[in-house]
Amino acid sequence: MSEKKSSTALEVRVRNRKLIQRVCICGVLIALSIVAKLFLSTTVPFLGPGGMNIGLTGVFSAFPALLFGGIYGGVTSALCDIIGHFVKPDGAYIPWLSMTAFLGGFLKGLLFKISSAKKIGKKVLVSFLAVFLVIASLGVFLHVTVTKDGVLNGFFPKIETVPSKGALATMEVSPLTNAVCSLAKYNKDTLTLTAVPDTETVILPVISTTDGTVTKLGANLFASETVKTVYIPSGYKSMDASAFSVKVDGKNVVRTDLAVFIPKDAAIESVLKDNKIGYQYTEEETVPAFGEITVDTPDTFSAQDYTWKSSNTFRKYLAGYMSFATVGLELAGIIGITVVVLCFVLQNKQEKAEGTEKARFNFQDFGRIAFALTVSGVIVTTINTFILRETMAAWAGRAFMILWIPRLIEEIIVCILQSYLVTLLYEFYKVRIAPKFRF
Image (cartoon, rainbow, N blue to C red; front, side, top):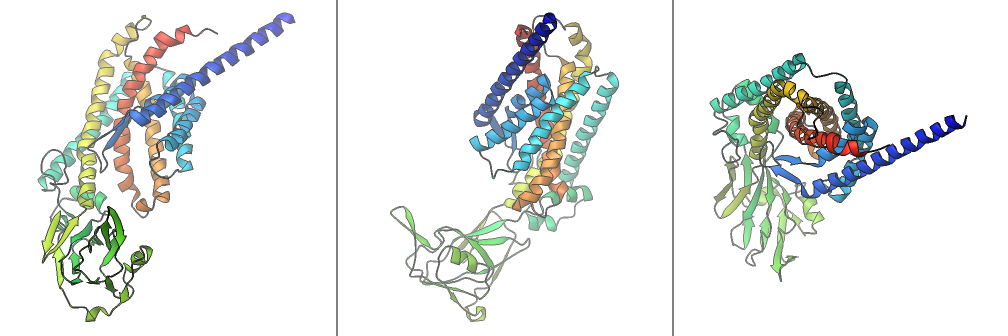
C-alpha cells in the first residue's frame, strides 16, 4: 500500500515538473515573440499596397503547439496576440482576432500531431507538387495576360507604370485582366487642391473626373493675406484641418477675416463646422462661374494658377493586387515546388541521419510543420477576413474575394518561410535541449 502511494506521489511530482517546465518554455517563447514583433519585423516592398510583412513572431508563437500540443499552442498564440497588440498597437483591438489566434495555435498542434502519426509518403509529396505547379502556372499565365493587355509594363507592377482608373476604363482587356484589375475598383483617388491664385476673391473650380475622385482642400490653402473671399462649390467634400489657417510662430491659426461662401446642403458644410470655420450660404448660380475641369487624375496638374495633387490611391492598390496575382503566385509556387523537390530527394538521406548527435535539417519534419502551419494559417486568415470585413469601416461593402485573395497568397508565402525557421528550432530542441530534461 505504501509503495502504491509512493508511486502515485512520484507520478504527481513528475507531472507537476513537466507542467512547470512547459509553462516556463511557453513564457520564454511568448517573450521572444513580443521582442520579435518590436524589433525583428520587416515589410518587403511588394505584394500589396503596404508590402508583405515578414517577421519572427509567428515562429515563436507556433513552437509550443508543436512541442506540447494544441491547448498550449492555442493559449500561447492568444497571449501573443493580446500582449503584442498592447505593446505595439496596429489599430483598434478586436477580441475576435484573439479567439482566432487561439484557434490557429490549437489547429497547429492538432494537425502536427495527426501528420506525425505516419511518414509523409511519396503520394502526398506528389499531391503537394501538383498544387504548387498549378499555383505557379496560374501566376505565370496571369503575368503574361496583363502584360499583353498593356496594363503591366515591366516585370514588377509599379505605381508609376500602371494605368489610372480613368485610363483603364478606356482600355480593351481580357476577362482575366479585368478580374485582377477589379480588385482595386473600390479605391478612389483624392484630388487635393494645393494652391490657389493670390487674389482677393478666390472661386474654386468644379472638378469633373472620370472615376468619381473625391476633391479635398489642402493645408494652408488660404494663408495669403491677399485672399479675402472664398467661394466653394458643392463638389468639394473634405479638407485639411489647416486649410483656412495661417502659420504664426510655427503654429496654425485659423483666419477669422475670411468670408467663406458655400451653397446650401454642400457636402463640406459639416467639415467646416467641425473645424469651426465660419461660412455663409449663397445661391450657386450667383457665384461667378470659373468653369468645369475634366481630368484623369494624374499625379499633379495645374489650371489657371490652381494646382491639384492626386493621392494615386487607385494605382497604388492596383499595383499591389497585380503583384499578388502575378509575382505573388509565382513566388508561392516556386518556393513550394523547391521545398517539395528537396523533401523528395533528401528524405531518405535525412532519415538515415536520425539519431546523430548534431541537429540536422529534417525534411520529414519540415513537411509536417509546413502542413500544420499553412493549413491552420489559411483557415485563420479566411475567418479573420470575415471578421475584419464586418468590423472595419474601410472594408465594409467590399466583396469577400477581393479582400481574401491577397491575404491568402501572403499567408501561404509567409507560412512556408516561417516553416523553415521553425524546423531549425524544432530539430535543435529535439537534439540539444529535450535530452537534458530529466523527470
